[in-house]
Amino acid sequence: MHRLFTPYLFPGLPQLVHRGSLAGWVLAMVYACFAMFVVAATIVWEEIIPPSAHGPLWGIFLVAWCLGIFISWQAEKHFQTKTAEKRADFQESDTLYLAQTAYLRREWFETERILHERLLAFPEDAPARLLLISMLRRTGREAEAEKQREMLGK
Image (cartoon, rainbow, N blue to C red; front, side):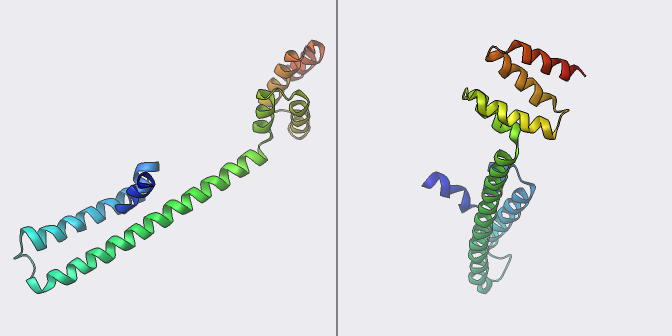
């Protein structure tokens, strides 16, 4: 639990650590500079601002911290959701990925079906044709593999 929650204690840190986001870096730097100013102005050099403003400044600091944590949490949640959606869309829509998966599972009929559908739609797709040639050779169908190789040469 603490591993998942810890980066959120500092605004901008999840975006900076997980994906090197420039917006996360800017948010973390602004928050760090503000935190250093608050500490320096209220604890180290108390004369910088009047003592009557110390309480409201700490209040603003806490509100900014809570708001920063909330913004970081929402941004990371949004990023994770978008990443999961992209991954699902990619796996569903990319038939070459599906064919490669079927090939690695040794599902020859499924691999051939997917590749034939893809090659009907995109006859110039060299990676799909190469995978089909590999699958045909793997299953001992050298004559068909040679026909596909000739088509690839064209």
